[in-house]
Amino acid sequence: MIPRFRLGLYTITPEAARVIEESGQESTYFLIRHMRGDWGSISAEETARNDAAITSGGELRSVYKTLLGKTIWIVTSADRRKTTVMLAG
Image 1 (tube, rainbow, N blue to C red):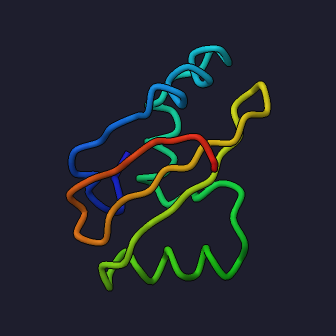
Image 2: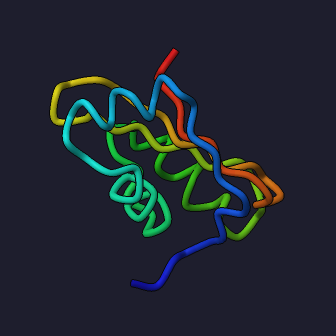
């Protein structure tokens, strides 16, 4: 797997960790999708914005559903120093 960008340091909120664990999934599954540029359930406009931000340095955001239907967000900062996995809110 060749990542399209760096994650930097990544954190996962306790709430997101709980719902991912309850679904029987791993956070790495979602992080790998995010790094590959598979942004999950976002609009075509958001997809285009993310794709452009890979080279321009803007923030990157993905939205995924766990197997139990809970929505999580993954956000990578514009400077690529930090990625956060969190519950949608």
